[in-house]
Length: 288
Image 1 (cartoon, helix red, strand yellow):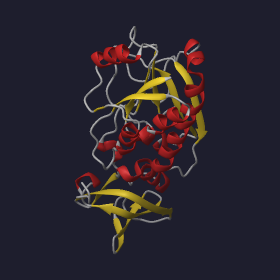
Image 2 (cartoon, rainbow, N blue to C red):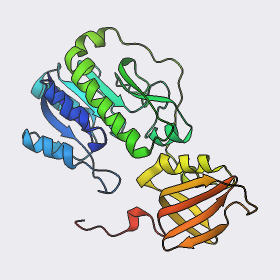
Image 3 (cartoon, one colour):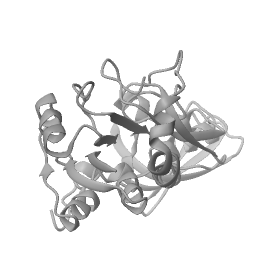
């Protein structure tokens, strides 16, 4: 089957999996990336390898009409990690689907991985669903790949699990069985929409117990949490901690050793092991 892919490296395993399943790519729709949090090097390399056109501007109904004329309406549009709502495919293409990194209908929205860890979910998953034109992540479900979440899950490990699950969907239910799945999708019903996180969501609250603070650090990982240390605001990528009775007010710096800072939490101490006074996005990077 011919397909156009709209997305970045975040779920680029879908692109790779469909090619491995025998599908033929005809076009890549991607977007500019910062090279720190977002990347598209992998999908762009795939597109160049297959000598297909690449479009960085937003995918519009005219683009869909043009693809349908050039490649036929049996073309599949596959969206994965694309920020813009895609409209105009009905009546032009037979298939249009989105791959979303949550077990829908839970976790609709731009990036649910942070909250999945912060709220202590014991299982998670990736969903392939019909691309809805009236709202993000609300279309009928075609297939899901579910997996357990460990008590010590981090943003990075959950991201890799989602990428591997997305590839399994592309190789299996989507890549091998899309026409049959398309004939019998399952409506989502009521669900939950998780908006984009704010700085408040990323801010550590040392009035909580140590485990809650560390879970939030793990939830954001290299995206960084924010901590108030005295009058300063710092950006935390890694931390450790332990429970211990004490009489310090939560948030008090109780010890410093080189770049490590121990901060009192409600029931123990949190040790900031990798942090910076400026966010990663503002640090000069070689090769940029």
